Length: 248
Image (cartoon, rainbow, N blue to C red; front, side, top):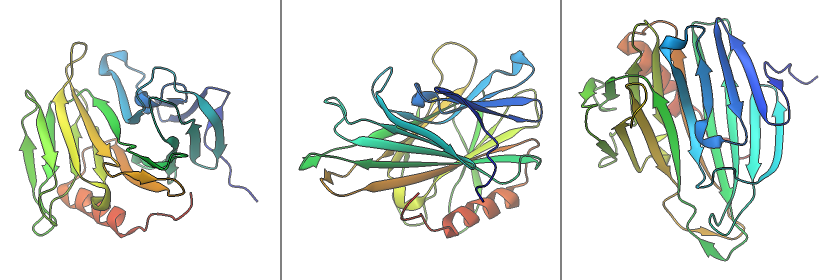
């Protein structure tokens, strides 16, 4: 028996309700990712776990919903030498105090050799950003949000887990990328519009050969109320302990 999907779906948009918030994904615009719209418009819109494909309307090869998964496959093009499959995976019951998504991105190419580098994109109306600084001795360091901040992996204990406090609300957003996929990222102030920051991670900096599939994974967690630091570390450890599925 197939699991019931929480998503309502048409040919270009999928959405679900989480409390008073509407959560939606527009497959024609993967760069916007999971859009979280609050009932109060003054709180702004969160764009979480998007993928920049370098085109305004990238050509779709296939779209489907399976359980909590939204799956979109984008054709290889001359500008983007790889076929890209994106899973936005909603995890856990919707009545909990947190909403969790995994972003799983896969690339493959028909070319003998290519460079499939992609960027993820999240836009959050927050200027209070902290980073889980180390796996060896977990602590949170505040990042400057008024100027661009580069996130580089320089040692085995370096992490890529960020906490964003949302304004005029107890809600908090946490985003993390698996260490095996962490190479380089950034947090930059938003240009124009609501005060906030943009977060991005570079995926697949290596070359890609025909017949090979590369896969990367991120997790985003939206909390109704700010969690304590130990809860974030626990979620991060749980994420690290989960094996990336060989097939999705």
